[in-house]
Amino acid sequence: MKRARESRVALAVGLRGACAGLALVGVVAGGGTIGSAHDLIPGQTREEPNTAFEAVTADSCSPCVRDSYAIAAVPLASLRSGTFGPTVANMMSRGGEIRIEVVRAYPLGKPSQQILAMRATLSIKTGDGQVMPVTNGLLDEEDVGPFAAAVGNMAKTAARRPAEEPIPDITEMEFHAGALRVGTIRVRTEDVAYLQAGNMRVLRAPTPFETSSAIFLPVSELSVLHRAIGQAELKIKKLRGQ
Image (cartoon, rainbow, N blue to C red; front, side, top):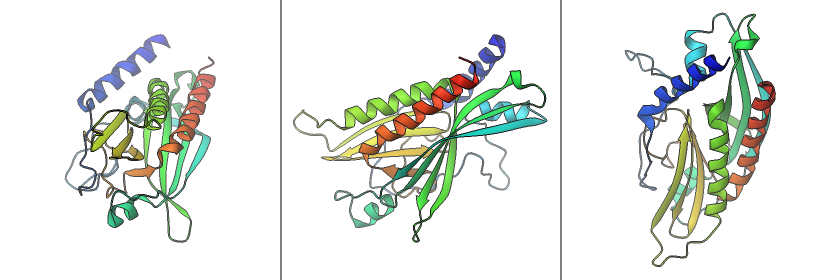
């Protein structure tokens, strides 16, 4: 098992090596929609997966058993903004939900070879008040703890007002791993947070117009997301017998 886990970790590092770096974004600039990492344009080959979980289940788990464990559904209130202008603010203010699950896969009859991940499903609120899933992203088990820590640290840091003078026009924080990116953007004195899922090889944060790959939320709700991811980390440890 130790050798198998080391192989999965090495594979994950190799797969994510091309997407390391910091993301900067012109906050009010438009951009093309980022599709799911699994969407294919006719004539294109399949993209390399963002996670070891995807690579293993696609290439070496057949026949494969897949389980999912619901962890939490984080409701998101509509975001109110007075900084970004009416059009941009309307794109960012839909509200919705982030659903956190733990997913497990193993070859049929071989549960000792299980591989685990966290899945975040992003949904937006429709005109009739229902929530509609728009995208989802996976995070390998070894990345769940660091991701939770990053969300918690961002929540604490964003809650503090900048002391420096003059105050920067734009300040950003971001962390990405697997097929998920979390971050905050401060424009002058207003803050907004986001969670993005899909192709993390695009080395920038989402624009407000990329509603098929990201959801925006008040910074105050990062603490709720932090707790949900922490619960997913505990579930993974339990499934590992730790």
